[in-house]
Image (tube, rainbow, N blue to C red):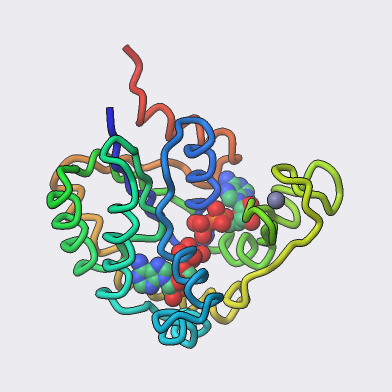
Length: 219
Ligand code: ADP
Ligand code: ADP
Ligand code: ZN
């Protein structure tokens, strides 16, 4: 069965970490607008040039740009591919756009998984976040160190990087954006009865178990 799910939660909630697990375990594909935008910035495309300052400030890139990216990326996937939306939608306009994007492609939204986290923990998570510069695998200075020091678990690479927007000041802006613009879209999905809330403060494996239970209910 083809699944379409949204992982929702503030910056640092663990969306990317959990999406990577679902990719590995179920062959689902993660569609992260943050990753797409960072790739555009790196490549210096017109979208990247436009988005860079907005991202560095921790504000939201325009709805049309991100919805356009999502539609394009979905078109590159087979109709049978299950997808995880990570960091999208982030506004009511994006939630509306996603409904159209999905229905135009014969897809429907199955689950919205909200990762519940304590805001105090998020600055700590984000300022400790780093990733493999070769394969993108995500790590944390204290919560998820590579098994062998300075060596990526996934690809053996030694080149790690940190995001320019992962500093305390920008994180505060990103959290405020989440509270003001993203959290208010939850009632739309609550009304459809498709939201499951998961304790995002639990260890990574436990969060994964809780999400698995949503995707493959017992019996
Ligand atoms: P998001 O994609 O929601 O912004 P990430 O998945 O990148 O968040 O996680 C942010 C940071 O917190 C990363 O460094 C990650 O390794 C770490 N992390 C993710 N989930 C947990 C967890 N359940 N407990 C502790 N640290 C976590
Ligand atoms: P995190 O999950 O840690 O908040 P992301 O990687 O999802 O970060 O996003 C990084 C930045 O990219 C955001 O702060 C914002 O500027 C931009 N961005 C990503 N996704 C969207 C989106 N759906 N709408 C608007 N801006 C976005
Ligand atoms: Zn790697």
